[in-house]
Every structure is written in C-alpha cells, then in structure tokens.
Amino acid sequence: MSTLRKITTLTRKLDAFEIELEKRNTRVPKTFHASSYVNCVRQQAYGLLGYTPDEGKTVNPGWKRDAAFGESLHGVIQQRLIDSEMVIQLPNFDYEAATRFLARLAGKLSPAVEVPLNEWVLTPERLEELKRYRLGGRVDGILKGTDKPLVLEIKTVAGKYFSPNYHKYYLDKLYHFESQCQIYLHFLELERAVILVINRDNSSFDEYMVTYDSLFVSRELERLEGSAGQVMRMQLPEPEPSRGPCNFCDWRKQCPASETEKNNGGYKHV
Ligand code: SF4
Image (cartoon, rainbow, N blue to C red):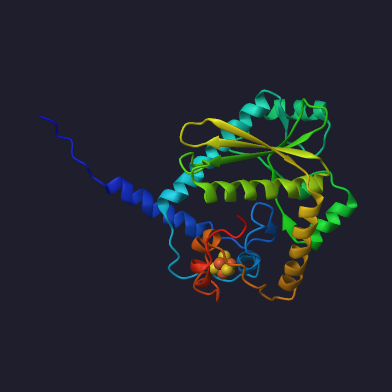
C-alpha cells in the first residue's frame, strides 16, 4: 500500500521566501526604461520619485517564479548565441575583438548578460538625448553575419497566451517588444532589429523583424521629454490608464485614475 500523501509544507515555505525576496529587492529606479516607456509615464514617475508602493501590494509567488524561469531561459538562449558566435554583446562593433573576449568569458555568462544602453558606443548627440529623456535600457546583443548589424532582443513568453487567439494580449505584447527595439535602433543608429520570442511552454521560437520608424520614435521621445521635465521638477505626470498596466500597477491605490481604466475597453493602442 502506498504511503504517499500530498503535503504543502515546502510549497508554503517557498512562497513565503518569494515574498521575502520581493521585499529585499525593492529599489528606486533611476530612469524611464526602454521596455516600458510606452506604458503610463505616471506609473514610472512614482518609482523615479521614490513613492512607496501601495501597502498590501499583492505579490504572487507563482508569477515571480515564472519571471525567474523566463530569465533563466533567456540566459540559456543568449549563451547558445554567444557560443555559436552569432551574437556579440560588447559595446562596440569590432567582431573579432568581441569574439576573443567572449571566448574568455565562455561558460561564465549566466544568466542573461545585457549591456546598458549608455555603455555602447553612442554619438555625443545620442548620449545627450539619453540624459535629456532620462531613459535607460539594456541591449541583449547585436547579431552579426548579415550585411548590417542587427539589434537582438530576446523575450520569453507564456506560449498559451502569446498566440493570435489571445488577440489583445498578443498585439499588446508585440507592440511593447517593438517599441523597445525602436528605442535601441534609434540610440544605436541601426536600421533593423530581430525579436526572438521563446515560448516558455515548450521552448520553441518565433522571430519578428523590426524596421526603424523615426516618426514613432520622435513622437514617443517628445512625450518622454515632457514627463522627464516634470520628474525633474518633482511633479507627477498625468495618469495614462489602461487595463493591462493598471492591473499590475504598484500605485493603484494612490493613483486617481486607477478606477477609470476598468471601463475604458482595454488596452489603449489596439
Ligand atoms: S494605476 Fe494606471 S493610470 Fe495610475 S499610475 Fe498606475 S498604470 Fe498609471
């Protein structure tokens, strides 16, 4: 007869540890981030201005593990790209030097290693812009082997949701991935980017090509410039509510607009 019985002791301890980790990892961001600048600027300004997140903010241990799992998978794929010499991660485009450097690091790059935007070789004009817009980001790598270098952006997604069947979610994700690449293309002054999407459910890939859209970038940077100025003056920008970001916002209770998003029909740009 089996003596097997289901228990939850270890699970509860792991969940509690995840919540403890979340408390320990709280840090004040210094810049708007390329991965989320198209979201509500007020949400990011709360963080930049050091506002304390809502009391009793829900931490879902499962989501946290999911994110950590995604980051590890990201690191594995990035390592494969480095080992196969398809990608460089150094802040210059000297492929030979990059390859020699990466060979020395082989096996030590875990999990993902990304190069902050301001550590790449940028023109003085672009560096000045980064400061003006108070913008930061981390570039996964530059792909070589084509006539012109391509920005690489790696994303891990929950495959069951990242499908055209989940229309709004899918388009929203793609829009955010593309927006992030547009910023990298602008600052690195390159024409195209590849988004490599990894399905967490079965480790399969999807690829998307992004072409630089100067009009989109100028419009978004103009919007950020105003918000960056307000943050410098210690002011909060106007809320830009939409269902996805508001649902997960750490400042829902403090934000005057958090309730209105419920009736606005969903994601703002699809
Ligand atoms: S609750 Fe919504 S509108 Fe308010 S700061 Fe957060 S994301 Fe922006």
